[in-house]
Image 1 (cartoon, rainbow over the protein chains, first blue to last red):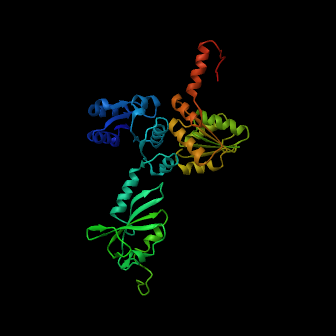
Image 2: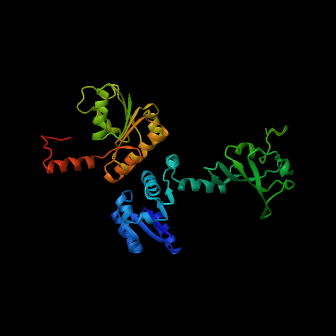
Length: 228
Length: 148
């Protein structure tokens, strides 16, 4: 595989190393002269000096035969443009873009640049995973397909606790795809009973999250538990 | 018509002033608050007192574009000092806000040509200069003073 990486920052440089270790042919393009010279000491002929948003620089780096173009500069507009030209002008099949400011993700979306990866978003996801709010974790968002896979902890005393999957009364467009219990997991049938302390994986249409999660969360409206 | 100009340098400010003088509604967006000085330069009445508007904000920020009135714009000029910024915001104006007339300044002839082929109205000062200079060298035209 031939990968063209634009931007030799920490991300670009390390990606180049990793991809080379996996046997890929890699060229990195860097426009800052000093950075280029630093990285060139290690990558040697695998790095070229120049502005990777200029067509002739991309062509010199062999974009026409690239299987993968990775745009990881510090400027979102540059990353958008590189990926757009890679795909639409040079017919590169796969592009990956770094999104520096998560508020710019909408621009990547608008112009069809995907996947666009935002470190801020990734770290937020990890925080969510480590410190889940309402016991909910997003495992996968399939934006284009408008589906998501979530992981939920089943609260003891919730509507789901002690209920079989068939009787969960989940809304249309949602499905329990596995139950994790005691360090193992299984794919349930309609008769499988969900218990408090289980974790369940669900696939659902985007937008159903609230109506699904309420069935697995602690009920709060019980009479006589007014905590004063 | 309502014209939104993003990037208030020599080019953006000059277009803004002539559009306002022609009686159009003009809004200018620039990330540098000092850029308004270019709009006031050589004017007897300050830009905002003449009815022009000026917003400070970054071109790529949707909130800044909205504050500058992109939803009501009939024409959009991308004239920041960054080719890539101009090309991205011009596409946002065209595709997301469906601004009818979008023009974008691109200094690099390569990108200007390709994006023009994709349906953007690009103006490339570099290419224009090359053509005018070539014509002058060949003696096909002769400029008195500043050409253009």
